[in-house]
Length: 571
Image: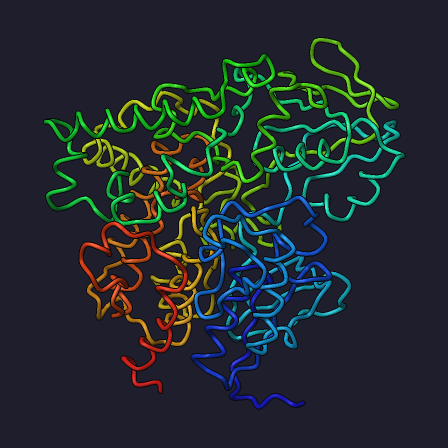
């Protein structure tokens, strides 16, 4: 079908959770657009695409939390959804159904890997796709590739290595072979949540696992093993209420009585706050039983003092309780704190010279926060993570000055963060992600350029709930239905907010927050701030007491797009 020259050509890069939400929201706000969703893989889902998932994989959230706000997940046959972690297959199915229901799937181009994004002559954006001989041009672009698209792999020569070696994102594709009789011993390299999931899958299928994690002296440590429930309450519920948010330092909540009582640095409340976190930490540390076996002792977090408060690396909620027993037993899994220095023949060579025979190596080594689709100049303009060696000197000078002042302000607001027990002393090689509200590049805000935004550029504890309000804010900007001038937000205020959030993340989350892409516990106040700018009521639970104590679910944000459109006279 021919496209009218006046039709707005919109491209969403990535068909993961954020990308699908952004595509649906844009279509709902403006059904006249010509929408294309580009997906590098052969199925939608992003982290939950068919190639990545496998039978034992579970989400870290339970039913009601990890679902689209306006498309409840089918819980037929689930005895108690509130206490059941969502199987990966169920989540992938939910996303498929969502894409079909809202007319998105027919607009997805699969196996379309974006290799380059650049400005088009005369406005808009050129997007180069692997295999195409010419770029596709769009008026508006939403980059929804998230934080798990570009695997980080160790620098190891695999030329003479015989067994397959691959990243955890390929586990689903290799599942049938890994669980076959051909494979008996598997090496897993890395200490994060994906490593725990991979270990459980392998041991559950009767494989012997050598689980190698770099020593604390050179690595980031192992992900803390958090209980699924705390004192009879769902762990997600504890951190998904306003009360739970209040107990965390929050840049969006640094005024009022509760802030002064708990976070300002003195008095009974400050003392009680730290006692609470010490008590909670002792419960969580006892759950894993780090002193009960040599294997589990090797997984002890780098920091044990108030470990529940200080988050060095992304945490792991134990959604397969049997995994704890597997680790303690040591029968099928051996935890080794070392580095892999070479892969030779059928052997993994460790830094102490030990050689371990293996049938496969699984790299659970996380993801790069940068994407190779931008030129250095464009990366700097868009505020994405980029190499400092190519960062423009004038921008570096400006942000260095702002960062220094912002860091001082964070310490003033939250004295608790003045001396984190696990400071990141490693050289910082990249400029951090600098986006206003984790969505809008500040340089585009300066130019009132409404042609590009990001979706999913920050890691939060509740992806599904955060995705809706952030998608709506981004679409409001792209469609010229959000004016920062009318809101009284200056360019200086935009840049200061970005600087203070980066500074906060670096102190609050040390390693995980170094590049401004991690805000685990801040998602509810962040949503409040987005909705207030949009003019939508952020407090979604009518009773004041219930709004304070009850956990927020995806369903609480079910009609926010309709509410906003009515306010704007768009329906």
